Length: 440
Image 1 (spheres, rainbow, N blue to C red):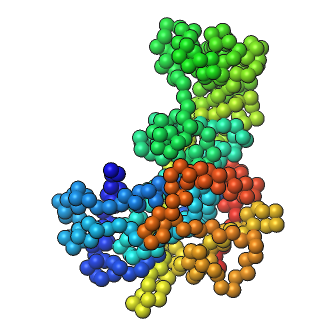
Image 2: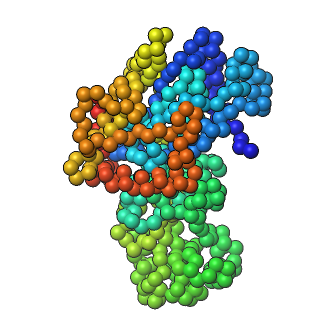
């Protein structure tokens, strides 16, 4: 039995439904969009993650007896609305950027078409999942590029909430990380897990040698030994004395890493351990990963900077009503006009334009035709690729976007979409988006 996700929302979502039911506008057909006005941290592109988790959460967005009794006891809404909620399940449709896709300012990451009441109830749930997961995936994507083909493991569980840690591992894997330290992420999503020992294991034993002997006895010579608890050079020598030149890897978690890594590599080679790999950790971010990518590092372990998005744990996404039908059944565009918080009204579709070499050149947002529609009078050519795909149709989740298959597809999609971006997208400096967003 799955736990209801219906209360993973804000109080005012339900009071809006309550008031709309009384006003007779709750069933008005409406279109909501989730988007970012800008890319946090002045990054060059964002990465969509969390879509599969959102679709699964929507399936369990039901108000059972326990949820209804809480709302009744707290007097959040009236009895009429409680009766409406008791029968609620989302029956609308959602189009969106598939997971792993890249995005830019203004990109309508999901478009929800439903009654007003159905669509507004999803606001907080959608924002909480996509804001967090996309921030992790965006940071992870930059690190994957900075690593220049060397594997990265996500190790941030201790730097975020226990459930957020599982979601972060999933998002980082979609963006190209190869493994996670989080076992629940391995069980829930099939992500490879890794890990051996921390400094406490070495400190438990009377000597570093005794700790290494115990670890090798339990895990074999292919294990990774943490060599910087005391003196790094001596730790490397002891590790090879205990495990032999077939030792799988050493891990370094402190010091001036470029200098230390070079010295450790020379020492390992001198000891005959030419196949022993070097893994580094120690609060790495995309900049330190980039600085180490040309060094003899073989793998990276990243924690804090990926799970909290290098200081920006959210993408600043918003969820806005952009259109609704009037009493005559015609679509009416609506938009917020507030300074610095304006939105663009109307139903939209999206095409990404590419040049003759297959490099993305613009994000084209077409007003009026809606997701999947064909724009009238717009000669876009063969280089224009439709970005929006159906995620949920008439209340039914499209299965290609959830589960293990959805994660695998998102991982492949992300690698392909990043490869289409112009070189400036890979810059780690703050700047403008890699391609412009245009409206027609």
